[in-house]
Image (cartoon, rainbow, N blue to C red; front, top):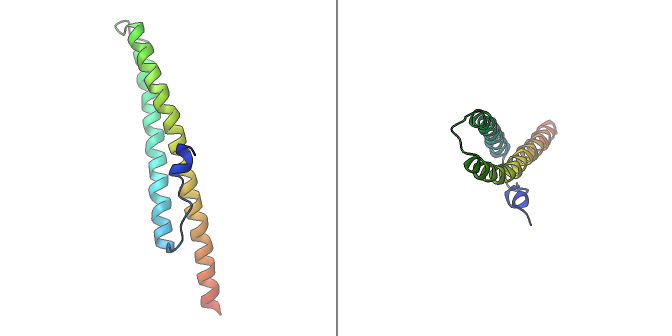
Length: 104
């Protein structure tokens, strides 16, 4: 197993279309927030690297920690994105089935 597999929710049994819409929305919002944070880290790293008062050893240690964190963030963002897409797909199927039942 991996972190990605732990985070991806594939069991949407019993979810209503509203439940699925909520899952999709929360996961999509989380992906957006994560990407904003990653961009901010990139900006901070750029400015820190341009500073003469930032010791090279400290920079290297900070870069290592940021690299480890970003590796994990990538898996989390991918899992959240897939969860949002799965919820949207199942919601569209559920809504089509509901329309089909109503038309009978």
